[in-house]
Image (cartoon, rainbow, N blue to C red; front, side, top):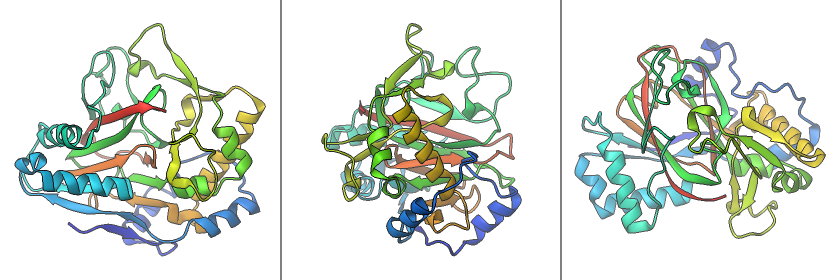
Length: 328
């Protein structure tokens, strides 16, 4: 399977249809006016195409084979994102489970985390207005609503490095487009003052009710940015950046944190504007062309933001797994 490569501002057909059909959907709806300095920064740093490499899995057995595992591991290290096309039926997500076990055994990835107090490794991402996977609490992923830019599990002290989504049933009516944004390029657009502010543990991050594991802990305090090896988050060292974000559960605790968050929101708003040169940060993966049934998308949760637009098909069904959790 070939890679998905898109170079903006040339808009590829699926994206053009997506924008038109969804009335110019924007994954981020914050009404912040982008500054000229930020716009110039995007032009300087956000160059080249956004790439999603692809590969095939011809049978379940390849998930246990070292050549396949080595290729997956190498792609994730290099690109932080990978699309795998399953060439066999797998409604139980056995490929994903075997793949993660293999990455754990051969490459030291930590095993998957539990999604909540009542759910284990796997979580079904599908609309369900009546029956919830966590009793009495409906997750955003169990609705047909859009879901703005976020990383998974930003509310955990140990955030999963990777997550994967397997398409059990794609959206047959053109909704549920998954969008991904390159964090390295996004962070590269921020002024150093914003990077410094976002790197301080001055943010309260609320735990959504459906994902509470310990009833005595409803939130954590931490930073949005961190450096892998402890160095200052600076331009030119973006490979060392780790990032977590979900705006609706994030509260700045200081004036410095609020200013840094405002800069980040501003950058997100600019990046989601098709007229901006910053639009090459984003790739839209349509449910029919890029994410049909049988697709597995594996994402480095610290290097890519993701979002989705409204779901049009009540039968849309994805399955998620998260693993390799480490202290943020």
